[in-house]
Length: 520
Image (tube, rainbow, N blue to C red):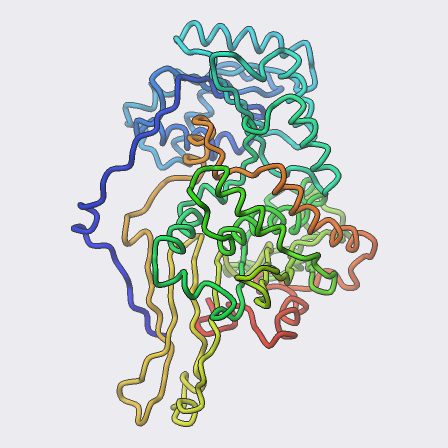
């Protein structure tokens, strides 16, 4: 397939006005579970990137909270994390200055008395550094501690102040089914108002995800055809080539549907399918997302399939199966692959099937949205098709690549120049983010952390959206729990998943994107 690269010229960028700087008020960011990998690999590098860009206030502090007595060791470990994972040079003059704002406070999360000491420490830091009452509490702990931390923050009066902004960021998973999500929402909202709660999904921090809205609503050539009259079906893939990375106990409880499909992929679905919001403020965007999710009927169990990887070859290396992973039940029935077919019953999308899939140990890492358009009448061309790779005219496909090779590709048919008659071959018009704008070391958390400090909830989940999505997927989880899979493992590591996922599309006469045209 031929590819035409689309690049942004320097003169195009010179006319772009600089982004309006939004700098938060002086604040203290408190990270619970700060000894975990998320803080070292993502949060601290992202905060330093904001510091490099001049987007943090001069007066700020970062306080890591965890059970281990780390002391000054914590700040040094965070510095190493910034150097290792943040694409930062050790000679950067801002790094040592930034680390001076980092401290640590040991606390057992369910120790109610310890929170009084934490409050005293935060007040001391605020006075010493000239920081007001703004606080952002980030819960990067295991989910079982969310409710306890929130309750204890409220008991010490750290949930609201008269002259400052208080917020709480809660990592996923937010509940493990509908009932637990509702319970957690009640517990959180008993302490924090909904406008203080930031349920974070790091996918929404990715520029390519946010660009879906720009692509749809800022380009007049696409919106008129973004509907059931022109689109045949939509596929959303979240594929990973890695396994569970030593997280056996977590993954045994979660599985692919809870871990990725119910949250990450549904967020992507909302951006693809939502109606144009009246503005891009938080309420307007989240209102349209909720309306879309409410338009999805219950998913029949026959439209949901699962899989588990066995031994295979990934990137030329032999790897074991899921049941051979560390701290995994050797007879585990946990799914490492999940796919569903769903409908959206509204005027824009009625009759258009949406296929969603997520899996571990697949052939390659790829998060991609594929929009396949309906075929025009092709008989006049099919009669003249050439032999070789162009024996069949392929449908127009729009591919939005979220990661790792961020970009947008449009496939269309073109006449083969040297062929007799009107032979048609597919060609790709391809836009690549890194070639157009340069490579970035951003993690995706920069935008989300900034928005949370500013109180902007546009890219965070509302409680209603969380519960709607759990309502869709909980019946599937219950049905799977009631019946062990007949055959696990049912796909090789390094493949594109189980055969049952292929049959899910074949019933409608469709095939997955990796089997359509350019396979990889």
